[in-house]
Amino acid sequence: MSRVYLVRHGQAGTRKAYDSLSDLGKLQARLLGEYFVSEGLQFSAAYRGAMVRQAQTGAEVQAAYHDAGLPFPEIELENRWNEFDLDHIYKALAPQLAAADPQFQRDYEEMAALARAAADQHGAGVNRRWMPCDIKIVEAWLRATHPYDGESWQTFRSRVADNKSHLGRAEKDADIVIFTSATPIGVWAALTMDVVDERAMKLAGVVQNASYTVIRLHDEQLRLHTFNAVPHLTSADLRTYR
Image (cartoon, rainbow, N blue to C red):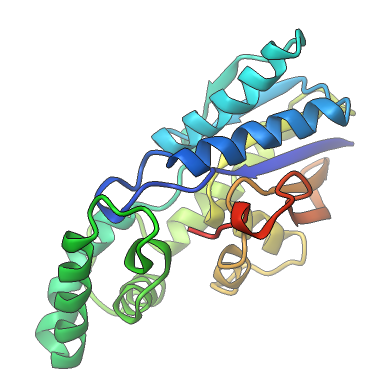
């Protein structure tokens, strides 16, 4: 039975540059790597999605091993661990929601103004929490209430779930680490409980930056062992969600 360590990327940048780690995000990832070293974890394989923030998180963990004089596997790119394309969802769905709902349009314009004003302020609230219009946009995508030409929720969920067959061919009784994002982790955690609908998003919503979730994999059967662990983030100012 293999142990799959699903690592969420560290804290990302502002809305203007979300696909990159903040300085705090890099620190969170480095602390995770140092924790794995202290626990004596030796990974036989490592994967990441294509997002920059996922790659940077993996690089910080890998560097912690190298600094300790320990080997760490090459981190292989696997696009199936990508997060859903939030930028495209906004571009495609926000205008449709605004045209149908004046309140949404006001909320969206207010959020956009706040984001422009705080483009370089990492600690600004608009960069660190979901606004009401954010939630409405993602819900519209989840429920397919409007025309959308990108990857649907169902296609996304299936794409992430398909990683089971890929990892099922890995070495048995191995520790594997994957650098990904909150929603793929939520999907896999949900699969361990036979949840295959949008409730996976509720799990994704509580996944902390640079946390790790351990899922045991045997013949494509998933068992949740540890969820959203952050023992390496020892103070409240190190623990973030966005």
